[in-house]
Length: 108
Ligand SMILES: [Fe+2]
Image (tube, rainbow, N blue to C red; front, top):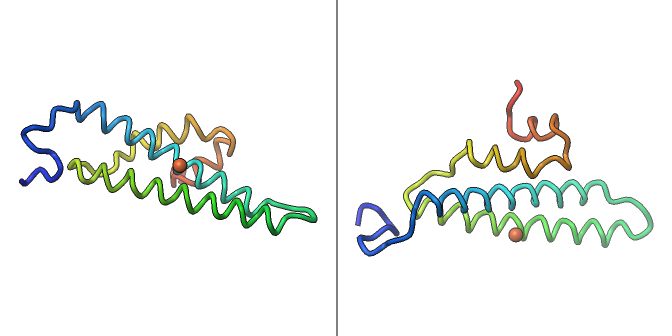
């Protein structure tokens, strides 16, 4: 009972599952950043609709990230910052490394 969602019958390799969940969380967070960036960078005659669409997508991705983070905690782990950071760095090249470091609070 003290292990939350992890019961004696829970046979999943938790280490592998948590690695995959943290990877998926990182992907979702990169998508949030990407869509938010597009939202604010949208220009042109149709930019209002496009910007609004990007914001909707950003919020949807944030919802996905929340679900993954909640499941990670249900499995008895806090989100693994090192793992998330590594995945974001791998997937975040679209931002440029300096921007990713700023987002992660590194390099201060
Ligand atoms: Fe998503």
